[in-house]
Length: 89
Image (cartoon, rainbow, N blue to C red; front, side):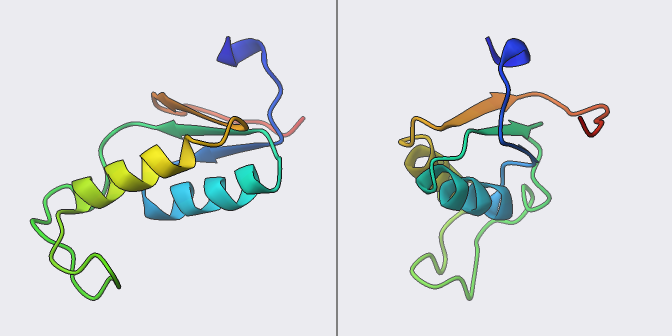
């Protein structure tokens, strides 16, 4: 269960930057939790441009592919939820 597990890193936001960070950390054998509310800033954008290998692709499709790849790492977990507060332990 996620709420009783200790993670090395918790990432708030599961779009491009959060997933990219999670992949690097997961590949480095860090335990990572991604918390994402499912409402990316680019959700109204019909197509991404100037993003190498993904020009013209819907942002949601890019995010799905990235999420699928990141979650191949056993060290990375994802929950769809909102982070309401945080504190350093």
